[in-house]
Image (cartoon, rainbow, N blue to C red; front, side, top):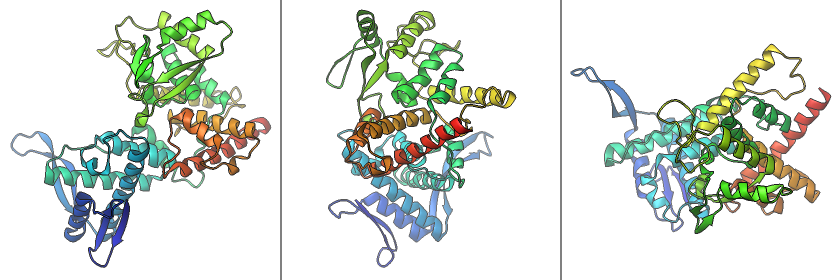
Length: 410
């Protein structure tokens, strides 16, 4: 697709598909926004008769700059969506049905792509939220589509603020820092969840994808953890065990293989026999809280919550005992669970460069090193944004070396 800020004829942004056919609703939205000078917001109001609060859509006036930003950011989202649909999305996902998408797609664009991959600043991220909200509110107001809550996830707020600084947060966690985080977990459940991020490259939502019994996924029967436990007992010298992360748990629906080290698998086994509540749930990681969620699979945000609590605890320990932690990497409060996964990916990328005897700066999207890193993380390599992802890992390799020097030399 292409987006054009047509100042001559239409006087607003227009969007065309690959056949140069206008995308009707986005173009109509921009015509409404520009010619009327208005945007649709979703706000809370108090009913004067019932004294109850309710939400309603409302048209507000906006200036030329705001009109331009809304059209520009909507176009960036549609370009990203087209790229995702072509390379890793479900078969039925196309630009034509973008109006009916679940809100997860918009929030993934903002929280994963803009904030984590592109390192967007707070201003850029907020403009994206404002612009996509304006468009989908407009669809709800005039076409009665369901309301979509588009926002920056709580665990990303510190990250996006740090992106405003001239000296950005270092998003790589040294192996020693990761081990310190694991050691300060209060439960096996918490430790496994965080190790899944740092040792397997899992996203927080993918912690729901570990099954005990064998299960059907992606066209065949896959081995569950019980099968891997047996394999581990039968092969005492085996170091690594392959697990299939199903497409319906993997972000963007891209299934991949996880390579679980023996010590990690033993930790999972110990958790199952010693700590896990009795439940009929077939997923390994379940809540052990005392409320209604006990025995149910952990939430998609569980990893993020655990990471935030553990890092807060360690930061407090570091402040109270600076000498005891003088040899450790400083843990910025803006770090998140996603940085465990990012550190895992950086290690794969760095080790691939070392093995190939190449500098990270020489790696391209066609390189075997990049392709292997993308495979281990469940990324697509043939997308419009693959080059940006490569740059992220090249930059992270530089951060890794700087951190190692700082820790060694003080």
